[in-house]
Image (cartoon, rainbow, N blue to C red):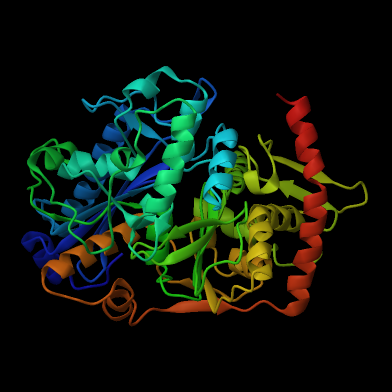
Length: 537
């Protein structure tokens, strides 16, 4: 939260010298209001959960609309409570959301099938065909894989399919009327040509041919996909209808400069200032993924590596794992409930601090394996997941060892993907980490450094998250309207992170080797996961 003088904050709010970032994550919709220099003024949020309908993970669009209103209303109430000002105007606005997935519409703009999220793994056949035809890894969750799978499955709605987008693109269009998408999020729909900053034209032709051979001769991907915009480019303004969607009270004015909508991976890079070559970041939430900005192309295609871009269009190697810190959160809930049963009303931060307190004790997790798979995990070759803990009879079951195994297990799938990048000779100067799991100082940071074999930096803004990163992109779009011609990386370095305070943990070689041994045991133990799937349908 900002430390600026209250009078200065009030002036910024009254004059609309602010940026509003909204992120629709997997479990929360968050809103963050900042100054144009990135200082947080107020936040708001709304909890929501995906549902499984017809064996596919989805969110109803009504929940999207309701959640936007709830998050914005909470933010506006905090502005009034803290500063005595009604939030009537913002200078810039931006939307980000969980990447990828499938939102399919007909020519009239009507939704054809329920929103299919990144979490679904039903597109294996389509992804394999596309990957072979394009000679680039097409992950199961990418939009083009969903399109082709619908064609392969002969789904009825394909005959009426007119356009597709991601969740951030959908909300952005509601707010601005513009059918555009930031290049980072667009790179999770279809491969991007880094030279042009647009969809790869040769690959579009090849993919069209594949889809036509499968029977959908009327589809042209270039017509289905939204227009690509890079960070700072014009992406419309908040319309009267968009302002009323966020604020049904009618207080919020229209006209805010809109940033190109982005995915949560892009906002994570921005929030950690990891947008230049040899930098990378790890975002730990419901899913966990690393983003490494590349100096040069990879030598070959790898199933566990997605090639995407930064919001400015630079090539990125992404290791995306469907399962992140959710299981740790579940266990924290159990221990918090236990504390309350003993008469101690501990806060979430206090619970996590107590649980993590002994997790750096080397060897405390000997004989304990923890798996965080709530859903399928392609990198681990799991079609379904079953969260579980297994231990040998001779192991010592302690709180320290249990939580060390949980933390190491939550980073394990990521480690498998990072091994591939190491084999490719990709060099990383430092990894930056963000997400709630890093709020407890040093613990998850240390274990992540050992898991990725590189220094890991956590900044004072590490828990700000994607909504803050999106607010920064909105502020950058606003700056570009005022003739600021700096690149995104240059603007972030000078305008936002010039006085950044970070803590850096460098792993010791012995600890890295110990994690590698753990990873070998954990990988062998995946057979337990597969047996659990078979016996616990």
